[in-house]
Length: 308
Image 1 (tube, one colour):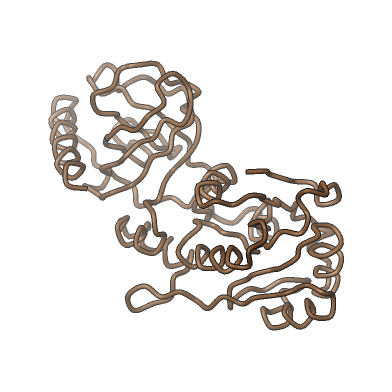
Image 2 (cartoon, rainbow, N blue to C red):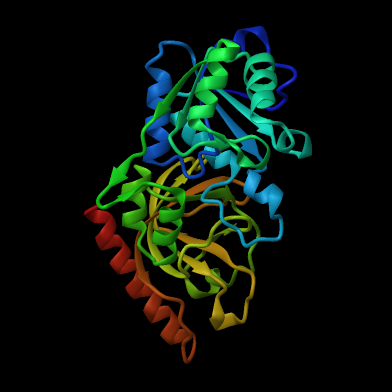
């Protein structure tokens, strides 16, 4: 997949795509329906998305809300067959564009799209004054075909990033997965930890969750993909997400113990899929009690993975 970050320097071969447009946080079933509509036009498949997320740009001090970072989003879109990802920089200049200027200057002149597909709830332009219907009308004037994909429902409600965040906050990763169409994953490099897990017999791979919407703190059964390096492959495991109250740590992270694995994976990129929530964070009367609980957690996670 070709990733283009400078909208003013799009190569000729990347122009003329049929592109789905949006933030695509989570790349959930609603986003996938927009991708499918863009794919059906027969042109090369593109995605227009924005970095930083507009919500981050307008409210940089707000609590983290993203379901995935830019790298994880790109990996997911590539797996779905996207040919070109236009990662448009969201800045003051872009935020100030009227809907008319966004269509004419960005989508048509800069990116050279042949077709644009958006969800029915799409909003754009200064003050979010542009709607999907406005995009269709402006596209008609500018020679850009526009398709509006309907909202997708799962169960009793519409699929949305907001609903997925709530499911994760509640510790319901399977409900989140039903709306996503895939397991919710935490993706990033393995960073240096305090190596306390080694002394307990449970060496863990530590990952930052900074900038991401935090799932409910606690222990999860997980599937883990090591995406690069000599140990690349898929493994089962158990992960603890939170602040480790037993040891007075305040910075939330994700610590994952990989089953039946031995090796150095510092710096490798991991993708940790949350399958089931096992229990909340706890404190214990001592290390023996903690180790007994970790034994039980891993046994339960292995049982879940055996039937996943």
